[in-house]
Every structure is written in structure tokens, then in C-alpha cells.
Image 1 (cartoon, rainbow, N blue to C red):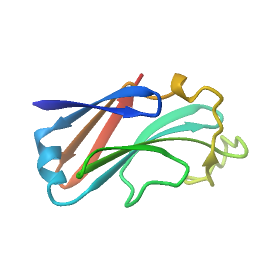
Image 2 (tube, rainbow, N blue to C red; image 1 turned 30 degrees about the vertical axis):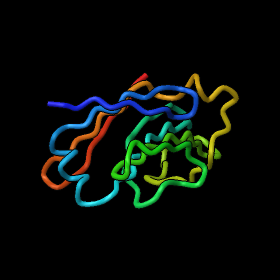
Image 3 (cartoon, helix red, strand yellow; image 1 turned 90 degrees about the vertical axis):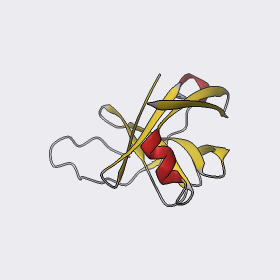
Length: 120
């Protein structure tokens, strides 16, 4: 079962879906959830759980337990063949960030690991 919460992230409302397991795990300490939209040869989206938010991310606090961030990033070059697993990333300047802000985020905690997904 999921609990639905809402927060204002940038210029858009974000629906946050938390499983009971995620809510229980957040009680142990604050959690930062980062929704990364990665622009390179292709577009990739992923949810990360960093220790602290990146300085160039758009963030909002849901409560004392959860901070949610959105971070569009890019690589300097596209190299599909021989690409690194972790290329150097830089902030991706978006002219209309509200058009790219996600509408929902789902967070879960299973077998000692955080997982998440987001969508538009």
C-alpha cells in the first residue's frame, strides 16, 4: 500500500508515492531523493539516493524526513562505443524547466535498498 503526498517542486506539483516500507525506513534518518534526467546520445531517467543534494538541483522538502530533488544533467560528448559507466556530468540548462519537471515520484525500500521511479 502506498501513501500519497504532494509537494511543490519548482513550478509544478509533484505527487510522491511512498510505500509503508519506505515510510518506516525514513524514520531512521532524513532521506534525499534525486530524480536525474540525463541528456546525452539518448535520454535516461533514474532515481538516486545521495547523501546530500547537488548544489545545481531543484529541491523541496516534503517534511523533516524527505527532501526531493530534480537534476537535469548532460555529458559533453556522445560516445556510445566505449562509453564510460560514469561519465563526467554537468548541469543541463533548460529554458523551460517546468516542461521537464516530473509529475510523480514513487519510492520504496526493499531488502535494505532504496528504489524509485518517476514519470511525466
